Length: 394
Image (tube, rainbow, N blue to C red; front, top):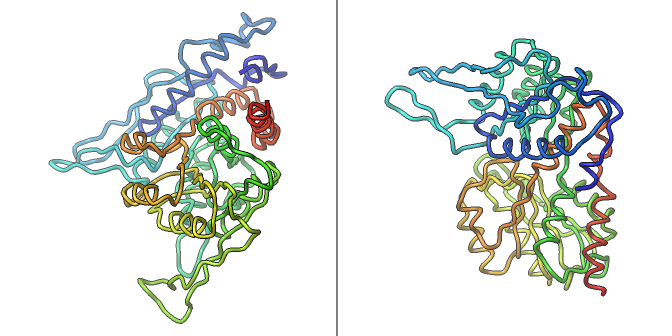
């Protein structure tokens, strides 16, 4: 806490801070607001009473915005207070499947397209009056459609261009499926943030007796796409890493794709070692559970599944069964996307709260200060591990 509350900013705020969390992100937005209120009440500057700090300390930074819908299902946005000259941060969870809206006698579940349109309506309602508009979109809309194969649309790049054309200055997302999509907006701010520190912190706060060293611990990538995440953690923790390669059967097509012929493990011996199995998202969960079972077959110790986004599109029954069979010990995902009450009640589940991290990024950006030290939390991870290990060495 001392790192945050005693931080001295050398610049004045860009503008009066304002948060607009859409309904899809209201819970996370409320937590972010609480952190900002707490820090700014405690913070003291010379000249805090001057006009340059007007609105700096407030009971809440949330600006109410509503997205009512007509009977036809069409919508609009209404902002209930002035945002002229403000530094606005719009927060949206495009994957929140718990919300719905009526169309005549029917009820529609909100899709990512609906959430994205509502966010654009908020920006349109601001109408260029804010000093700066920033978007915090934890799961980047259409990030899985980031490259073209054949006659396909480039939806993620198109979405980013739409936001830039509407006047958005900065886009903050987490663990983008492929960070190279930022090439679509080279002249504007785009940051993809990794929750590595939050994973380590949550794991060590909930598990006892782990030995984080190369003889007892390692990181695993379930495929070549997540290698960078596993390599980063392995380097910071000073442990080995391994990965699985999916060998496909290119002689056959099953449901429009080549079936998996075998999973090949690449890495050192893992017998008896505890490990983090890390990926960016869990959709159905079939692959991650399969890899966890293969790790156990090879003699792995405790297996901790870490994923930034937990969608669980096929439900949680397969995870219940996998945990009962001992394929994995704990499942960690963040609160960046909607978490069902059923998920939060699972005894094997650990939720990684990202609200403090997001609040710190917003607070730093509002002062127009570099966030590079926040995007690479090597020192914080090492300090967290050292503190954890020291309590077992005594």
